[in-house]
Image (tube, rainbow, N blue to C red; front, side, top):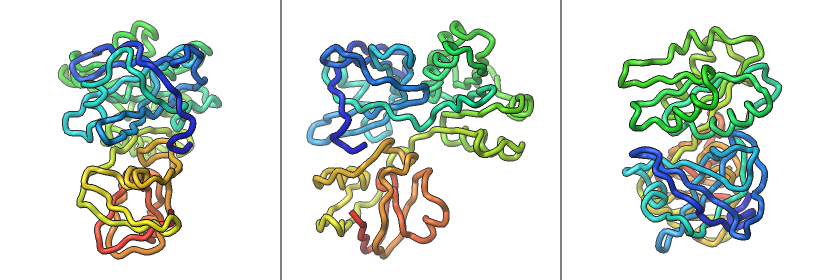
Length: 321
């Protein structure tokens, strides 16, 4: 997908405060038509016109794939973030028109699995609402473990328990309830696939434990969109386009390229999909690779960069764009 293509003109039909940190947003097509189909685990990119800046943020679809009359996402407010969540919380209202992308799925269910084991933390629960709805409709075998800080910030815990009963296991850290990860991972039948979504620390904990217990790499799936980190401004030369750009302190390299009128491909904007991978022609300095895509060999060689989340510090950088 490219910025500017596969765009859907949508209207916000409802905004619901789920708890003190999370709001839910409902979108329908402006023309009243059916939205594109999707499968559990898919996300959309929401376009936000914030003064003279366009923000493009990915959010997991939490609505049922069985009903494409509307799309539903949930956004956790991050007061220390880059501003996208604050825009959604403070400036988006019912009736407002916005542009969203077609769904993209980088966290899909492997339907060859005999069982699906899902582990979520915090707002990482959202893709599992769509996935469990899909599996429940198809008679799929699944088990969901969801950890959160306390009842005030639990997101859809009661709804999930109501829908799926004993297949949902809840852990409240303020009650001292903790997931016995080794026991859960060790007790699964052959052919189970593992899915995890949540904070970086949780994903690392779960995937490392799965590796140590001998889970095949192809059965372990995770999703975490990295947010572009701030840093010192830096200059970049785009060799093919023949232009020089400056990347601001709170601007990603991808955003700076787009602001220069270039339309690079992307799917996630979070360092996961690999679509915006860019060849490095030359550089004098060092990269801050913040993605989940490049191999260690690519990082050591300095031949590639993911402009959606990575930064550069140094004298010169020339990219093949």
